[in-house]
Amino acid sequence: MRLSSFYLPTLKENPVEATIASHRFMLRAGMIRQEAAGIYAWLPLGLRVLRKIEKIVREEQERAGAVELLMPTIQPADLWSESGRFDAYGPEMLRIQDRGGRDMLYGPTNEEMITDIVRANVKSYKQLPKMLYHIQWKFRDEVRPRFGVMRGREFLMKDTYSFDASPEDARKSYLKMFAAYLRTFRRMGLETIPVKADPGPIGGDLTHEFVVLAENGESDIYLHRGLIGKDIPGSDFDFQGNLEPIFSDWTSLYAATDEMHDEAAWGEVPDEDKLSLRGIEVGHIFYFGTKYSEPMRARVQTAEGKEVPMEMGSYGIGVSRLLGALIEAHHDEDGPKWPASVAPFHIGLVNLKVADEETSKVCAELEASLEAAGIEVLYEDTTDRAGEKFARMDLCGLPFQIVVGPRGLKEGELELKIRKTGEKTSIPVDNAATHIIKLVQEELQLLAIA
RNA sequence: CGGGGCGUGGCGCAGCCUGGUAGCGCACCUGUUUUGGGUACAGGGGGUCGCGUGUUCGAAUCACGCCGCCCCGACCA
Image (cartoon, rainbow, N blue to C red):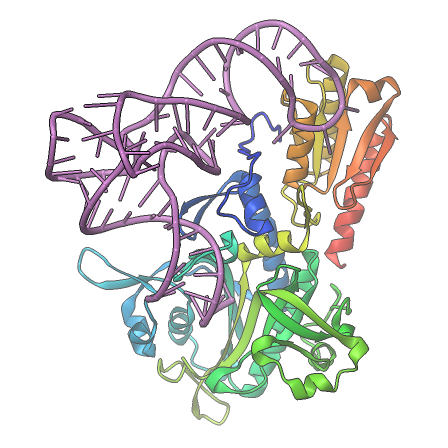
């Protein structure tokens, strides 16, 4: 992709309303544009990252055995009357009427609808278990949207819903999602910790929040040092096998947000293992049993011929919010530092002097051979000044930059800059493409957790 | 929802108190200059001053109403 044809409206100055790094950089790098409070247009650069995140989420959902479908953003109110939530849900639910005066709503979540979809056809325990998911925009009319996409009113979420014939089976579904989440976030280059969440009136221990560790996180979390950098399931992990070991491995050490903090249990953690950090919630999984299946009569017959409500769970990932979390976790004063797996492009190819024939020729050849190898290149082919190009490239946060200019070419060299470390090295033009392709592929491989 | 504040070109702001027909920096266009970390100089284009009503000879400026947006807190993916 040539920058001259791309749409990248960057800002040199900081927008005043953006107080945190991720919000600031997303606006400055031309990733999003605010259209109303908590509602954003996704500009090309931001959209590319969003799609990368979605892709990883999908791959890991499928791996765990979940099946994708897509439910609408607008829902009829009657479903919500069945569960009692049409009245129970507060003003954060956006209610609208169609031309016939029927009550509709812009979905803040989809438990009712998925329950309706499944109850229509699933009648026997033999048809279970099922895990269905979708990635869809939701709307919650938050009192106070803020921090850009971290707390918007419209946001993109992945929601999985599990249906089982017994609580024992429901636990298995829960553990599958638990394991899938460990892989999902790690593949994005995030250090994520599952922490006990508030089970609410349903009780039980089957609810966890997945929290990204980031200095400017919204909530305090307390955890045992041993949870940092812990192994996650590999790509050969058997989701049909026994998942209890991986679950207990990740949940036996102390980890809690301040709401769930237990001073007594915390006291038992050795002082040298105590970590008190900030975190951003990016995922939430819970088992809620028959909360919806009971009132909505979503039932199956058991082997004994008994009719029972299905055991359900729901598992969310804040897809759009993850962009914010990623930047909070990976940035410096110049911009984001995207992990290769979610970067909008792998490489920024900077042509320092477009007017110079040799420079442009080398760039065009590099662009072609990198793209032929499946590497995503943003070719900086504008006539802007060098300083501007460099600053803009850093602001985009692409993991690698290749700088080509007449000065280096005279020596037969070009410069490679690693965004993460700031490290710059000269490499010979001759085998540059091969070298860079290898570098990018290695980086991607590392994050793929094969 | 409590508390604070702001709406003036794409972005950041001044002007408002003390009404007289809009200005600065960045960005943009033209020229010169510069040429490896947002260059310098000169010229130029672009604004229903959030919306409405009122006061006045005259309103960005004063009054009233409405709308939008931001920040702190409580709440939430």
